[in-house]
Length: 166
Image 1: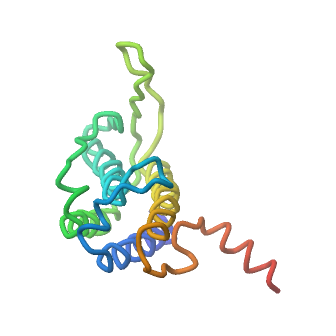
Image 2: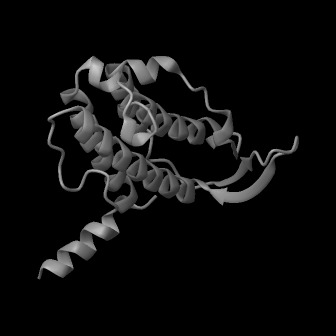
């Protein structure tokens, strides 16, 4: 696996962990009107569970994000969420393998798409950044916490903004 991918995932999760530990329990579980009444905890759970689905399907070669657990404990306990995030980061360094991605299409039989571990890691990284942008909106609405300017921003956007400043 690419060193850049691993470092990017570690960096993004470090930013998210730092912010989660600066929240209090009420802020973590408070619905945000600006993100369709979802909570920061719900967005965090969603991020974690997609990585868990990827890791759970690694050995069998079959990944299905639609079968995630939707574990209420993760969305209500930010310390538990941080523990899971640390486990995700530790386990990210695996050899690339072919995977079959099962996607629920509304039919009884899921659609199957060929993929691989690295491709799905990259998808999960981008997905995490997208949800962090939503978490940022909720943080701005519900708290006085100041997040880093890179929080919830894609690396390509950060690079582009840096070139515009010069």
